[in-house]
Image 1 (cartoon, rainbow, N blue to C red):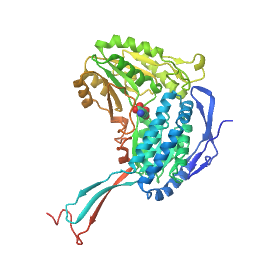
Image 2: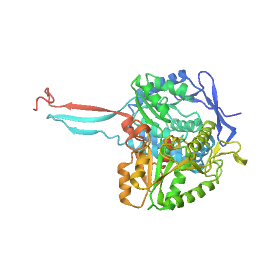
Image 3: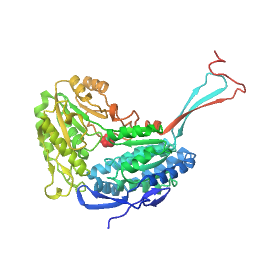
Image 4: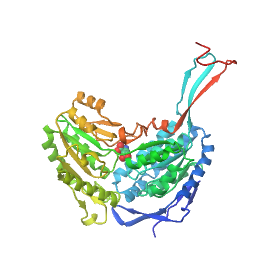
Length: 495
Ligand code: UN1
């Protein structure tokens, strides 16, 4: 019998009111059922929002350093359970163990960062224009945050959102992706065990159509933080407009790595392999375009194809596996359909291109690491986010043209430039339109204490990570204290 998991609402583990459940299976072996989870609906969201609203009235009054102490405890518990979480995560979403350990570590880093922020949460004091008057601006919590997260970083991304939300004094209703409910449950177990009062964090499992929409449409939810596709993000933005919720969106990417003719080619090779095929290409930050200088094109391509063909596909729990499966059938089929699209557009397959189902791969959603050459910037495989192990290679002749190609997309999350020429590097830093730029490092690998997010249709201007995320989870309150004992009229009495 598959293990049965529940929602956490107001500190109690409960089934969906309807009693319905859904199954979660291992993408490397679809015969393995990881567990059943509540298939929740609007009434479960109502319960969770009610609990979160009631909890908010008390939680907002707990001193932020005390909230930080709980964050530290959460971090400690995550450290203690790191290996167990990483294994469960690999089992439910497929990426290799080294990467799921990294995902948990990103959550730990976020917990410890939030713990220290409890003793900062800086506001401002500024002089008043009037005598005997004191002026300051404080951060105040906002209320109930709806947290809707994807399956590709099932630990890191929920922690990026919930830890700063809760540290700031808000409470959360959390809907994790239905492909990764197990990891999400472990996170919430830990948050509960660390001593968060009932209702501060609530988890409601289920689909986006039911649970996600009910959260976004709920009049008593004040904030929405969502990571996922640009299409869904736009829908959330429209729906949230009805109640004027504050919305933070982290959406698609079509990230590129530029390799100039003066680059360290071995370094650039390691970078593009990791950026394109790490996490099976299923990162918002994944490298899906390689913009390659014509002078090193042939040399670099032969190195790249040899290494890509040698990548070992397999169950992420096995130490020899380098690339895991796609997360589910839909995702694997999307990858296969883009291979068709690329071929029809006239691009040439330099590596991979096939579903992989031989031997031990027979019961998993595997697809070969795939490289297209002769890609031109107008092709769909050069423009659309694929979210899988597919790299499109575009030829270039200089840094200016490379940057123009890199920017020729509706997205703007991550970018990378390999060059030994400092002038080119700084030109790229200045002119590339993206939220993150790496020099001599791949497009993936953002650290928890720096701003994370993108420009153009990758988001709506907010940033996660570091100090910047606290601007999303707090309102500014301006406070004036007049100790003159008389009415002082701003803009009038002093001028
Ligand atoms: C994502 O793919 O949505 O920078 C997040 C990185 C990771 C986070 C990726 N630290 O690739």
